[in-house]
Length: 170
Image 1 (spheres, rainbow, N blue to C red):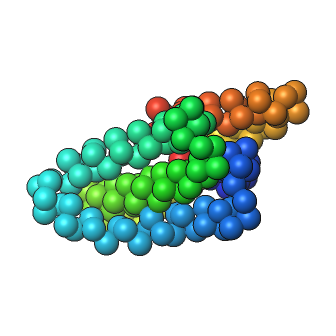
Image 2: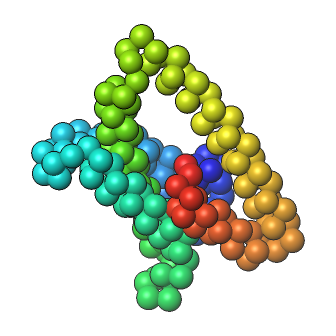
Image 3: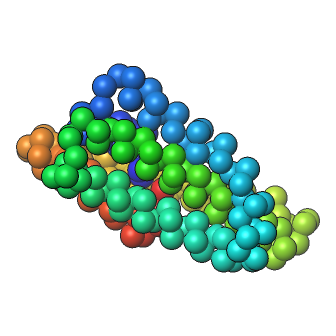
């Protein structure tokens, strides 16, 4: 819900140039490389539950922050908003990767090995089905608002990021 075309649209609304768009499109991969610190975080925090909880809280807070990013233009120059978006996306990606590692580790403890593949396949199918439906609805809403007025399109995109952060949707 906060990636792909919606993310590209938001970056363009924030004034991103082609170089920044290229970097923003790779932010998830850059953040994924930071999953290597998950083991260090586990040793620091002690439990997978605590690490996952903190990671998910950071992820949600950053997504809400991404939605509120245009309001930062009151304090900083607007040409830096796209760079702020890039930084926030890297942090969100890293937090999401760490949380997913902890979640999968927990699943390996809870779901028996002979049923794990089926469980993860069903989980992935359901998440893709729901995620695709929500993302298509969000994209339609943003396009509809953007057709009415560009400012309303920006507000609709902000709303999608804030809602994704509050509900914990990707």
